[in-house]
Length: 309
Ligand SMILES: O=C(O)C(=O)C[C@]1(C(=O)O)C=C[C@@H](O)C=C1
Image: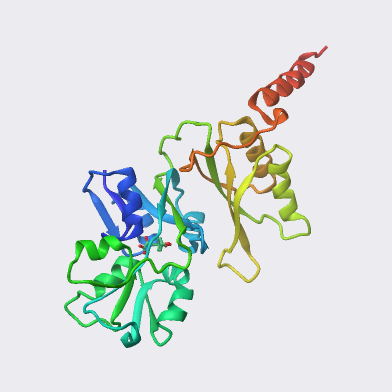
């Protein structure tokens, strides 16, 4: 049961993976989100863990785009990881002496204010992950940077790294949401009282009111959206899809009814999964949007239709 993840060891993604598989060691580090997902799609891994949303930076585009096209995948679970960044180097030195610093672009976005105030002279060098940036300092060949920004557990695992500044994130409450994905035939996680469903909705027809028509499918069934982002398909300018998280499980009548409506107006709508929310926050459901209200109304219509001569 190999699990692929955005590696190497020491990334925040690995911390999320440890929540799913604390003692396992059949973990396959990948150098990018698409590479981790390709390992599942090509059968080299049974599942993968990747970041999907950060409380400061928003959706992780690499993940939103990679799951929107290509062979389908299913989200099995989500995990939350509190984000804490340290600045590390190979030797102790004043912050004013740092020439270039490396980290993942999402991490850089979360320390930007600190960096502007504390190391304004430093050039930013992107890394494929926070741990990859830090481990680059330890490589056999000299890295084109002399400091890196990573999770504290990287310097804990590699005592050669000196921590120059601790807890440098602009928002100390930052959290990243990760998802555990399997192949399209993965068993649907059971319904709890606090679930989330993730969808990809390509804009079927570019016309006035198209987005409103999509949103109406949720609004009229009492389904709350917790995230909506538009992403370019890459096909041509102005061609977009929506990446959407809604409160609830496909086994909830209101969610199932909304998906029926959605699929009618956007026939290429993609279901990415229904799974338990990591924060266990239950959806607020009005009495006329409960399972009972939907089945009662449906039974009423079925009864009327059965009265044929
Ligand atoms: O580079 C890492 O350590 C990752 O796990 C990736 C990632 C991300 O893509 O957002 C995860 C959490 C942090 O927000 C910064 C980077």
